[in-house]
Amino acid sequence: MAYNDVSDQSLPTSVKLLVAGGFGVGKTTFIGSVSEIEPLTTEELITEASVGIDDLDGLPSKTTTTVAFDFGRISLSSELVLYLFGTPGQDRFWFMWDELSAGALGAVILADTRRLEASFSALDFFESRGIKFIVAVNQFEGGFRYEPEEIRAALELKPHVPVIVCDARVQRSATTVLVALIRHLLEDADTASTR
Image 1: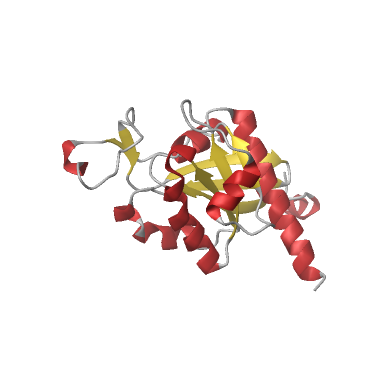
Image 2: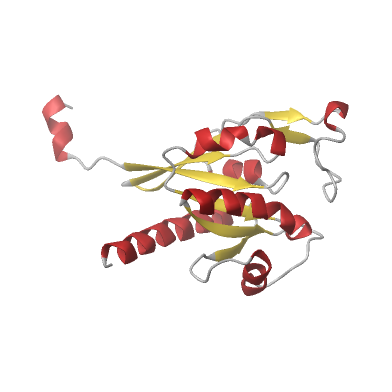
């Protein structure tokens, strides 16, 4: 293809999104299930050194943890490519959230009903920075099942914030969450342009 032909083609729009939430909510799994490329992960084995530092209550089978971030990519269409950055969930790695959120258009906050209180820090982070987000409740086996409106009330979410139930292990479910986030961002942009 000649260089001049590039202007005649539609180039994809790339969008940076974050997948955030507390420790052990399924961020790495979510990105791995939806990414069209081999995801970059920084998973390390949980060792005795983390005893007393990382709260493993309610996570008896967790053996690894993200120590930096996860990265994946998904093309929703020929015109829209999403770059996904998964944040680390432990408090000791929160300093990375500011760097990872630079340039992000929006975020998925994954929540786990077994440890719903772990969602508050992520909610506060994105609200304080004005980054739009949705909440996706990752349904774990043995976790409590609640309706989205019950989750909204428990997390004290504003009415315009979408709450979706998902299974982070299932590609179609994770993709549905990302489509919902893009719709939320577009609706919010439309609302802002009519003010």
